[in-house]
Image (cartoon, rainbow, N blue to C red; front, side):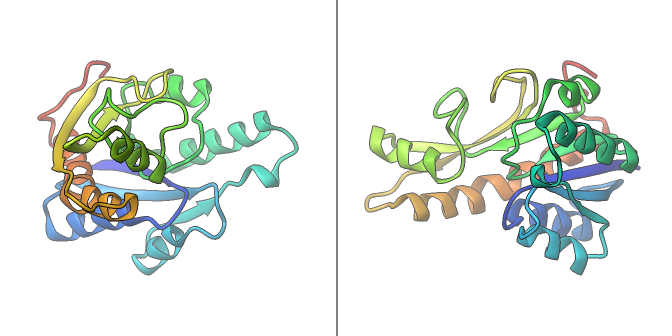
Length: 202
């Protein structure tokens, strides 16, 4: 049984996609052991609660220094005994201490076809704003392993999504979530859980 910790910051739509896929059996042999949010008001915490999944808020405001916050985050992950850490709309910059601890065991979903529109400063709606500004005809989402860079780790899965005439960043964001993110992230977890993807660092 693959034990998964999901890290979130906001609404938790990707978390919901994972929960639904586990319920449906499209993610096999997997259990979410904890949901960790840096934001006490994240609706993702409500989703976890409704599903009976343990959750915890580890907010930087609770700690005097960034180092103490990072130590608390790492401790929360260790306490969960998770085999895999999934960043699902997590806006915390993951420190190297945690990346080292979970090397080859931490994945992230990014709302573009990496290497396009990724790296520092590219998150959330900003990704879609830049894609529309650039005039791309195709965008999408990427699931990748997390390394010390920003969106630079080995890629597991990608899925393309068409950009349509009249798209706003919000409309495009929703389509990318529905047609790519909510499909890719459960699929990636299932691949890891079933051993069909071992990863470069495993």
